[in-house]
Image 1: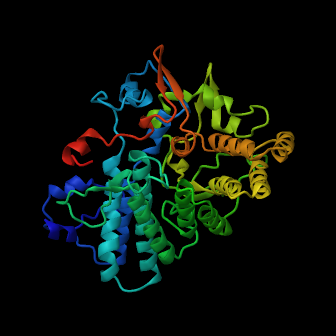
Image 2 (image 1 turned 90 degrees about the vertical axis):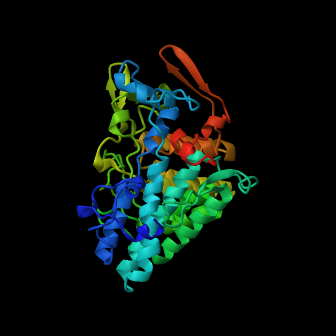
Amino acid sequence: MKKFSKYILLFAAALTAASCDDYLDITPVGRVIPETLEEYRAVLTSGYVAYPEHKSLTAVRTDELKMEETAQEITVYKDIFIWKDVNPDRITTTFQYQDLYSAIFYANVVINEAAPKLPASAEKDQLIGEAYALRAMAFFDLVNLFSKPYNPATSGSDKGVPLALEIDLEQTFPSQSVEAVYNQIISDTQKAENLLNVNTQTKGLNYRFSKAAIYSLESRVYLYMQQWQKSQDAADKALAINSTLVDLKATPVLATKYDSKESILALEDGYINSIKLLSFASDDLLAAYNKTTDLRFPIYFIADGSNFIIQKGGNDDQKCSFRTAELYLTKAETSLKLNNLNDAKTTLLNFVEKRYTTAGYNQIVASVNAMNAADLTTFIADERQREFAVEGHRWFDLRRTTQKQIIHNYRGQDYTLMQNDPRYTIIVPANVRLNNPNL
């Protein structure tokens, strides 16, 4: 079976992806062995297509949504909404652990087999760089879903996730420490950074990694690791390529669209239709906005009786993994952590100017200029909540910061996620643990 890694099923136009399990059930007779750059590009495209939209499920666990309780389809999300992670109903949707490893599988094919086989070229470097970047992003999402948040003091002993770096369908990979997983992520991003040679992808191909996208990923990784200077340096590199923000005063549009001026990587939908049809904006989320001066409010939300429908997500044109707004807010946060209070305020106000009415912006300028470090920390976190509603940031931001208490009401009963609750770390799906008890 180990030789089976040489036989990779290619799909016409590479628009659909098979799970890794499919490779255990077929014989590679008559299949195509990748040989050319175009064939390996098809393999990696399958990896991009396999990348799951798991961040939608995290939104169900946050303070962003309330659920439509009368809909029959709610049963597949109900236990996620009430954080019933131990012995959930068997029909409950599971977090896409295996799908993330499927994306890693395709990336591994390109990393391990294309490198020695293809002749040297800029296109080859770009392809392999994208594979390293995709693998890094998948490991980053895995360790932030299924392991404790990165803690510099305990990451060496905190249990992480398996590192599958080879194509071996027979091997059961053991879990590594959180520190080891992050070290691998950084190694992969550095290799990607050295190989990628496309600064920005053209619209329609911007589901693929570029230089701007790998810098954005590095900035996020270092932010979660509390390595503030490295996070800021990476954000600056990405902003040197694209620093454009959509000015909502002039162009009242969703900045999450793949063809937005802010788009850097358009791979994931943070709020998929199956959840969008069953949920509304929570009272907590709505209360975060100044409905008079915040220009995002009428763009993000539309009234439906006493509820508000969230207009983000649900369409392919709204796939968004990285955009420039994140870089501004990361730079503001890291400047503050580095005790550069004035730089943090300047960066934040440059961002805020594009999101509020002129009157609202002037009020914020006066308020921000009077803030101390603690107040500014809160305001930046609040801006992240407002800006990135249902884009997949909220769960991870809460994990790495306050791990606040959240109360969800379902059919008249309150369910509580306590502050610093162990359920801020998601349990590996039961079927995966059955196949690999060491997890």
